[in-house]
Picture 1: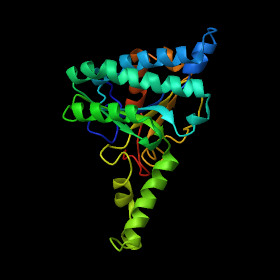
Picture 2 (picture 1 turned 60 degrees about the horizontal axis):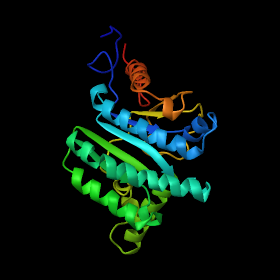
Picture 3 (picture 1 turned 180 degrees about the vertical axis):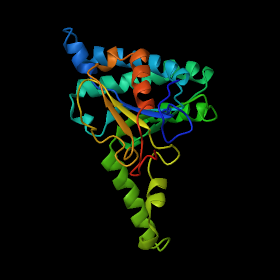
Picture 4 (picture 1 turned 120 degrees about the vertical axis):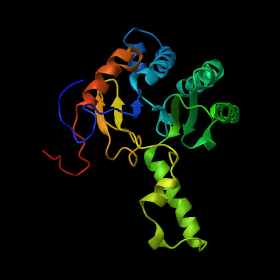
Length: 246
């Protein structure tokens, strides 16, 4: 381990919670003259590889952005194809995830999703609820602004019903109403494909996260590259608005 001094007792920091914006599946396929859905299927295979590698890289919580509230604007063919890929992933990976100690859960507004997909999601959440080797969270029909609006509406309803006063609403109360209420905030957010936007992903939770933007398209993103990014993260000074003591 290195000799660099940090504010932590450990020479290197560890990213316990890594969140990933998995971008570039469509471009990966288009660059090869293939339909975009081929890229999404390849991306799903990459998810399996990264999930399998995550615990050995020290990651306890992995959150991946699979489908945003804005992705409904894509073609009907692509949206339906993505939903089939999600369903197939849950069906095919359920046994392996359970055997490897992976807890799987979902964030986002499920109300617009097909009832059969919702049932599959609820089923694997229940099946893996007690597992602890890795906490895998998948964001489907998720948008950070939508999530915050839903939380604010819930608090407003409680205030209107006299269950709490507006003055009582603080960060903790709002956080408790978010989809991620039982997850720690991410330490590190990674976006693949060369784009440098956060795309409405965990805006509240990632307020103090470190960010990494890589040119690599998601289907080409390997555990080795993830390990490199984690190493860079480990040598960053995270001051959270304070000052590192000499």
